[in-house]
Image (cartoon, rainbow, N blue to C red; front, side):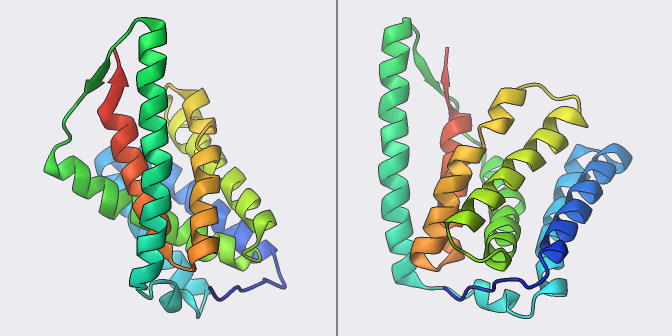
Length: 201
């Protein structure tokens, strides 16, 4: 993975602020559904505007994707085992809600891909690409979810939005380990689908 330590860290942080502000304003101005598409467009456009190496981030590496997918499957399988053990301990059941095709496509094309391209492919890379960059990008990722979903939209589940910090560390690690944005996109997409489809009841 080509790392791009930024000499001027103000640029990625300013880009982050602009992106989050644009998402918040668009949700208030045009509604959630249209804002989701606009947000995806903004997160894809900003790296191309600010970073000449953005095209390289999209390079497809089949072996990197396979390695990332293997790690992702192991982690997500462990999560499901934990969920079932927790449900047995609490005397609850795990209910599977089958996602629709639109739901799956939306999470892949309008959420997982643009968020990974911006947070990992741009922010993490411009912040240096190492563990410090992974942690910084993960803090910004969790803060974005907290601000966009909880604070400014009046949505619930504030604690859950803060906890996005932890899967973000996994996504950052996958990007650093494989040098392939598609491995972190795979994990992000699969984690969202599994988290939203398997629920305690």
